[in-house]
Length: 130
Image (cartoon, rainbow, N blue to C red; front, side, top):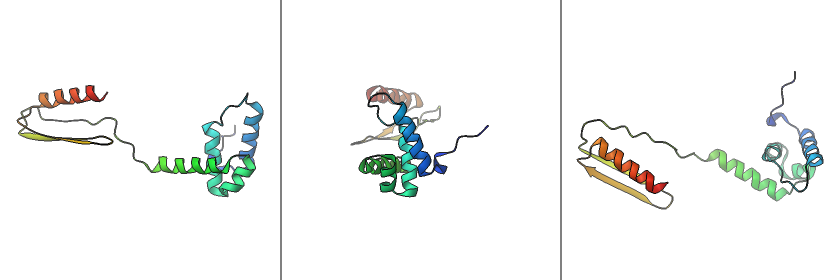
């Protein structure tokens, strides 16, 4: 049984064949699936934007924008979705909590806080943010 070839090993003729098969089987004016755009982007990186756009009957400008978007997505760091706050069970002498949003920063310097206080504040901040 043959394994499917990865996008990296596709050549321009194989990409053209995939696009032609999709165009023949689609109904109406469906947008090009992301999987096919990924194929086009990878082939364009190897063979150039204009030859790829012409061969696959794509808008060269849109293909360039897709390439730029794919490049920017791979270079961006993903912000953490969960941050564990580990605090000792005894009272803290002091702590600093820093939060950063898109357009603002919040810094809280707290003296005499307990772990329960920090947990309660975290819940309140979470409720406001969500």
